[in-house]
Image (cartoon, rainbow, N blue to C red; front, top):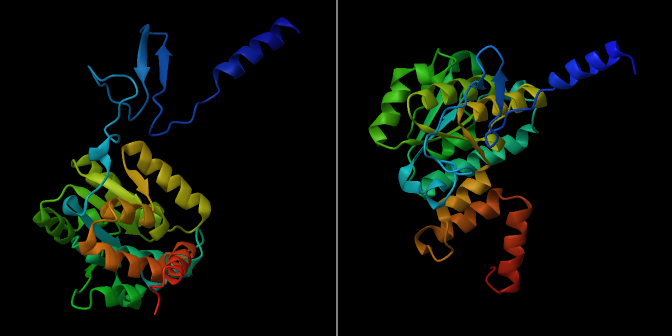
Length: 263
């Protein structure tokens, strides 16, 4: 191999980028300073043991008492250009999420953008909260509408659960801003969607890089229930799972049949 080719290969190898994830910290040496330069979004953590994370351990699992849910722009206009997921799946999942939140007495805030043009929030979601009028905004970024922020603050809760259409705009913007204001943000990825699979995926990656935690609605419901001996919510959880849990709901109904509990 010629010296010139060796030089090129060395440069190419040095240019390989390592994708950043929420669990991987990547450092690059800055030759001009002789020090390790932190990647964007990487904060120093003096005294923290390697491998520890703020998102690990029992306190990292969510409880109903510390959460507030904001459901953003599940409207006809947004569904018309939803291509990251099958639309009926998003309808099913966001309604299931809303029902679980109601069953566990988690505050839920509904909001739309330009309702007169984009359409009202989908009926199945409004039916879960028939007496709540969604906050209609002009801002694309929900977190810039002070009415929404004030309602969230009034709950006194710091774990913010978001789902929206579209992921790359109406979910990413408030998630990123709320993180900067000290909220713990959880994005329900399968109750949200974008104009393409790539748009949804890139938005989730961007939010994760800023500190948001992706979760699915079934996973969230499990964290809220946590214990099958929690009888106060068990009947509602089983009912919602049967209505919206897909194959899991079918399996549960079959189990009840085998136990002789099905009517």
